[in-house]
Amino acid sequence: MKQIYINKSRLLSSIYEIAKIGKLPNGGCRRLAFSKNDILAKKKIIEWCKLLGLILNIDSIGNIFARLENNKNCKKKSIAIGSHLDTQPHGGKFDGAYGVLAGLEVIRTIKERKIILEKPVELIIWSNEEGCRYTPPLMGSLFFTNIIKLKDIKKLKDSDGIKMEDELKFLYELGLKKIYKKNLECFIELHIEQGPILENIKKSIGIVIGAQGSRGFDIEFNGEDSHSGTTPMINR
Image 1: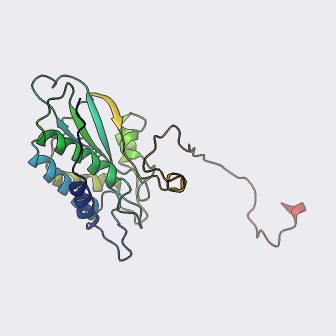
Image 2 (image 1 turned 45 degrees about the vertical axis):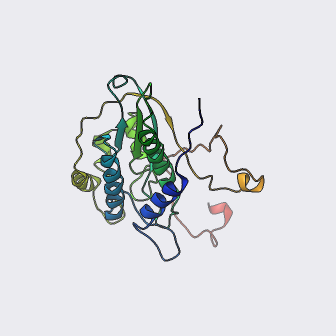
Image 3 (image 1 turned 90 degrees about the vertical axis):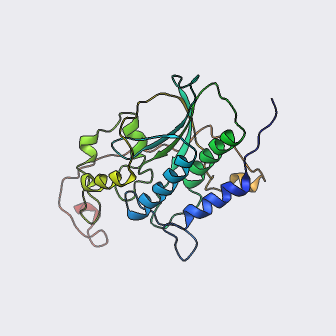
């Protein structure tokens, strides 16, 4: 099969366009989950997806799904590509957005070349991946995989006391239907390394074979609180 290439200039242009939303003076971005900037970024991606004629859906927590299918493959499981658009308070322009826009560029290229696929391709934008405003992180994918429930998510509050349940109402601004049915075969995410390994060995791409794991614990200490510097060890 002949090799197919994406439009690199268009991909970079799209990344820089999204980077304008929540742009910081130092060149980074601030798009906290469910904030105005997060919603604006999602609206822009939705606009581009509509131009491609994709089937758009959203779930109860704001995960967005944009599917390219045809009459022959519409009942088959899709190959999904995606990432997230929310950022840390001082986030980078490529973190998350690169994975979303790379997926969009793949779909743009497929449409331009009039390629008929055996299986649908689906762009996914995960909601609240960072978790810096509402914990836990990876909330969108945790909800998608039934690890956390909507009733528990709605109870969450951010540092300003704003309820998650109230913020979810803003998702109606996106104008998408909540009729999504899970039908995925696999998921591919392109992501910047955020580390020095590939750069040090002068490689432009790598395949992830493992990632750092994390666990959370609730720990209760019984006793009397005291100053760590002046309390003798015998009294601790």
